[in-house]
Image 1 (cartoon, one colour):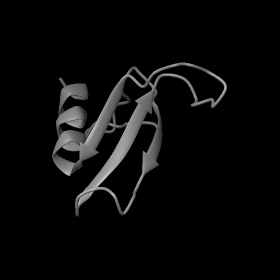
Image 2 (cartoon, one colour):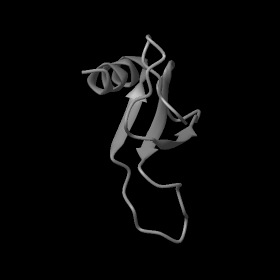
Image 3 (cartoon, helix red, strand yellow):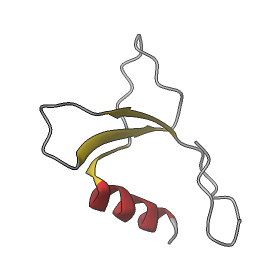
Length: 66
């Protein structure tokens, strides 16, 4: 996933993500995990950020834009 600023200027970091949707989550909630390297099941790399709903996701994007 390449994140772009509104002016089409590239952000300096490239992120990879995984997402999970489950019946066990509250309505409207979801999980997106962001990594600096492609997720690898055999790796113990932890995500750099986990968002659990739309507000968390937007906050993360806004932090990247600063």
